Length: 128
Image (cartoon, helix red, strand yellow):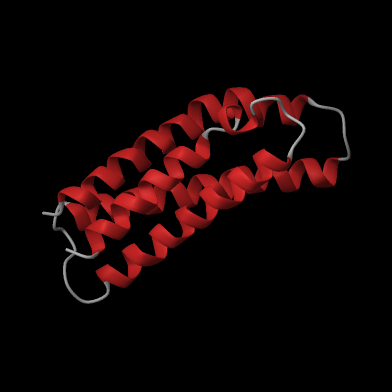
């Protein structure tokens, strides 16, 4: 059992639930209702679900490794890969938020905080 990776997995689970609840309500449904070209609209719909798949698979992997269901060969590099992805997501979202014209963008586009926490706990846990 690895408590740091479990913490990363629990934060990832909360992020996944938020993605499907708040993300659907505040992003997906308004975007699908908006009037713009069907091709980019459908691409964005697919991207939402690509993110959904990544969040689900990453959460399951973090929790499985954290609870000891998968130990040894390959688990540490996989956790590093997942953590690196979340770290890049956090950095990139924060950069885009800061560069936007949205007032208080880092607070309104808050997902970077969860991504950063997942990355930090997963990286620390992979080092145990």
